[in-house]
Length: 233
Image (cartoon, rainbow, N blue to C red; front, side):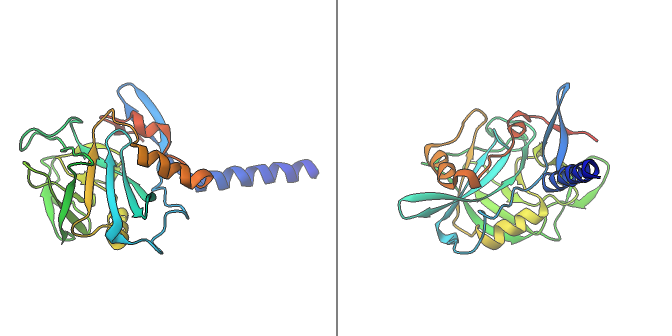
């Protein structure tokens, strides 16, 4: 009876762990990686007390992540992060229609110029589905000189592409995440940095993670291994 109780306890722990940490398989070339399938919304990432006026966004192509930071006095705090999908080709955008996402720096960041209701917007991806809803609730239009038409938006009918590379140049978030981002952190005027493949954490990012200590767990290493990823069943 005691052995049965221990076995049942162990089974309960394993089931609880599988519920707490959803996973999915991602194919890169001939390899399949077992990676996190959560939005990583933890208790340390909350809207209470966050001043959106002091927030800015850093998108890492290397990690397939959108990070939200808040300037508080001399500190820079990490307040949220979400998995993303960006363009089919990983390098910097060169011209219109080249299926690339433009990049920026802390010295010359992009800016959110409009936040538009995109709940009814449709797009034809020329994949046989015709014109389908594709942008979630919000389209955060970016000023990305010399390019135009780039934004951060939802992924209606394309959520399986996140994290990954599948867009025509924009940054896709899951539909629930674009709502959360708009509701709590993003506004017209928010600065946006898009880091290239190969660029690691900036010094302030490392400090922000260190400040959170044991409360923070970086996205699983699999997210750094996904250029050109395809999800597998």
